[in-house]
Image 1 (cartoon, rainbow, N blue to C red):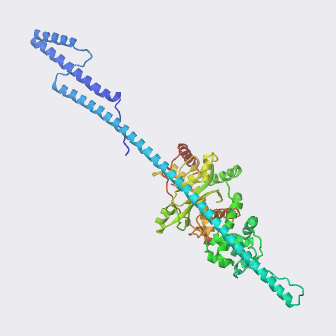
Image 2 (image 1 turned 90 degrees about the vertical axis):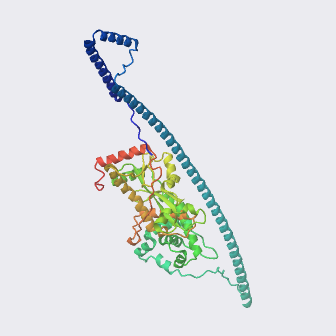
Length: 541
């Protein structure tokens, strides 16, 4: 509870009481003089004797002491004034004690809040390290299982091939003997048994005469963009033919991955469409996504250099009037199936309350340029974390702490804190016209990031619903989606009207929303310039 300070009495306030006391003394003196003159006229010599006596008494008294009043009313007034002064002094002393006690309580509350905050941060860091170690162990265990399965499969295939060759040689020998030992026949190798599946749909799509519009509707990109991606990934996903079977072509491998990401179809339907096994389709999706992350991400998703950053700033300033804006930041949630471990960490309370259904999610934080191309992403943190907590865990936050974002504003929504490099709107009540104008302009920059994530989810429908991908493999898939989104945006690939998606993510105001005094002053200065230089518009009025 806030306590207002009691105004202390200064010398000017006490002067009024001094004047009252002086008036009382002068009135008492006048009364005594009047009484003395009348008594002298009435009583003569006796009055002179009394005057001499009073004069001698006054000479004996201390000259610095005030003459006490002689009448009963004057005594009452003097007593009242002394009581008032004593009461005021007591109130002043009590006020000082209350202020000291309030300061002590405030310091105790602040220290308690700081200790609780540090404890929470330490607990989150410990949990994050534990989670990463667990995922690493799972990955190593799966890798060892895959290796064992491959070895056993290779051994079985080799044994089957040896048996086939031996039987073929025996048959050739028998045939040669039956023909009188003539020229030996050239036996052909028997192939490993493979289920015959129809590939008509894929052969139809891959044919040069397949319509461009139908291809774009199916794969969310044109044929030219698809061929570019296949050429870039050729060296990373190409497999050699074996004596048991022919390798799946690069174009078909990439097509399986892109179709799966674009439609979100179950692997069972993807298997029927491309004429491949379910496990093969799942393996192809992960392999191609890993190749996209390793080969294409360093080229198509990176933080801009100084020249590109200067262009981004100028484009954002032309849109909003705010200088030095280097990107629009947004955080979205990707729904997932309830994990087997750390269920509470991935529980999304806001989406659960909104959808009336238990929801679990993984976060994706991204920074985009004015064209909607991602320049930085942070993927994989649990859905229970708020936007400001995800930001503190990101590489972008570490880059800013190293001083790499000097003179650069990253614009975010009200879910992020105001810092020296993060610019957010005003969130308190009763905003001024200047603050309304600033929120209107910064909302235009925020809209760029939100619409970019909306196109990301519209283009890759697998992000709209819970996926079958394992939790430890999902960050690789999400990163591949972001890279493919950048390639499509750079090549101006438009989204079909029927595929548009409206994004929704709740915004929570952080506990400590103001973390820099300098940023507060800089934001106020920007808002002032927007309004008083005619850059704010009038829609806020």
